[in-house]
Image (cartoon, rainbow, N blue to C red; front, side, top):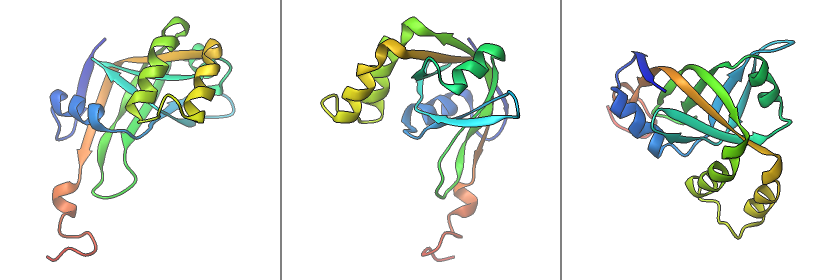
Length: 155
């Protein structure tokens, strides 16, 4: 497991800090026929691994089993624009789903008593965890340059 910074303004520590506070989905890009696909998944950073969970039969799982190299982006959709993108190697971890899914529910503030949480947990036998490691990352942060350009702010 490693984190290599390719380019961008953030240090490895700043990237890890961003991951730990960003409660937005990761966009995971996979290769396959007829072409690449991007799937949005909840993610959990632990050390230099990005964890996700999904159903065992999901397209993303089938694609990663065939080709484990994947791309990703973690970035918000609203200004000021900032985030990380890169690539890594995914490994499917069926036994880790029971540990990771409850942590994802907690991270994304999904109450355990909610119907969504109960539904997701009721399907845990069919869930797998995805561990994305060997991360090569580029960061960007347009907060400074956008600070006077955002509507409602004076120049």
